[in-house]
Amino acid sequence: MDKVKKWRYEKTISFLSKHCPKPQNILDLGVENELSKQMTKCGYNVTNTRGENLDLDFNSIKNSSANIVTAFEIFEHMLAPFNILREIKTKKLIASIPLKLWFANAYWNETDDFDKHYHEFEIKQFNFLLKKTGWRIIDSEKWIPPVQRKIGLRTLLRMFTFRYYIVYCEKI
Image (tube, rainbow, N blue to C red; front, side):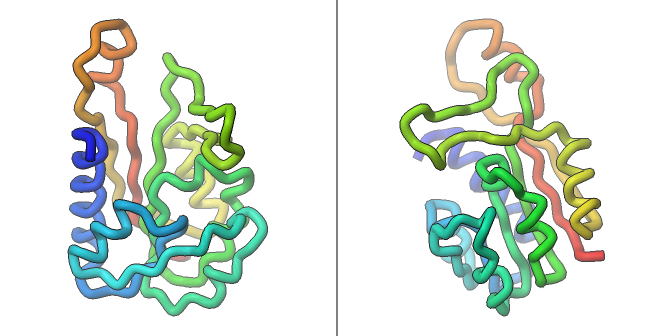
């Protein structure tokens, strides 16, 4: 696992632990991945969605008995995150997003229809989306990741620019 991914997982699990005591039943939006496996190793009971199109299929959300929903860097890949945020029935949500960088284009994988950022949010945009879908932000953090050793203006800007935003919300 690379240095930045390891750092991001540690920050995410630390924030999760702060707001979600173990053991809890968690529905993690997205297929099983390295982070959801780490959450399980830390003592959480994690169920992931099955890879269905969460823009259209809300059954995983509606049929879940989880205490909390987590959504770590998935909303930027959805065409309409408003819909699933409105459909979540649990009363607690922890979600993270990569922030829009003014000096870099949105991530766009030309060969994979799912590996694209349809949205790269500013903090105020994401907060507004949460508010409009019935969530109240209780806590949040912004993170600047460790920078890879490269030379250039973008590398320098990344040393001072928040890249990730995480929130703990409760349903209003």
